[in-house]
Image (cartoon, rainbow, N blue to C red; front, side, top):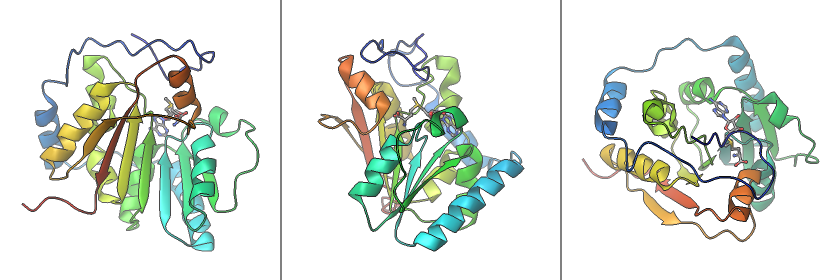
Amino acid sequence: MVETDRPQPLGVSAAVVSNQAGVFDDWQAVLDRHRAHPFRKPIADFNRLAFEQAAEHWSRQGGELILDSGCGVGQSTRLLAARFPQACVIGVDRSADRLTRQLGPVPSNACLIRADLVDFWRLAKAAGWQLQQHFLLYPNPSPKKKDFKLRWHGHPVFPDLLALGGRLECRSNWRIYCEEMALALNYLGFSPQVSALEVTEPLTPFERKYQLSGHELWQLEVNLNAPNPA
Ligand SMILES: C[S@@+](CC[C@H](N)C(=O)[O-])C[C@H]1O[C@@H](n2cnc3c(N)ncnc32)[C@H](O)[C@@H]1O
């Protein structure tokens, strides 16, 4: 298996290897379980503090909210802030090492927050946050079959992520990741689109690395504010 979360020199990233030939067999049972039993893991104090910091930034900044979940070094957070100057862009990652790498100043309409998304998303939902856009750029693929529950759509926090609404965009170099997420979203009443991604200007370091390594890149897009009629 290739662990794609580990920094590697540019241009030498191996393709994702998995013991799954297609989508995870039991995805539906996992989703049903998560819908029937809301996720109740206690929220860590440091994530509450981090969420307050993010909420303060938003109340100072105003504007529509864009979340860059798993932002790594925050390159995409900076680029999105420049692309959407009227919005407030919040990049969240649990890795202090990544967040503190010196990529230059963070635009005033953006901030980088160290937190675990599993808690951050639940706090955001409890606070009634509604996003304009939500980016999940190259989440860890966790490609071993036994690790399905570590992929965001297989994690019990997935319903909380969806409750934040907005236009969700997930990118991956593992097609199955996007296809599984699309199946899960369809099952839950949304209309996702999965397409091949042609990158001209990479948005993130992982995107750049995968592009230089010749990987096919995939993109899932869905409007979470527009569920299908029941
Ligand atoms: C493969 S990297 C991609 C980083 C960046 N989006 C990019 O494309 O360069 C996945 C990122 O997700 C972060 N991450 C994974 N699980 C997380 C969690 N539960 N909470 C916060 N960040 C998480 C990791 O720290 C890592 O920076």
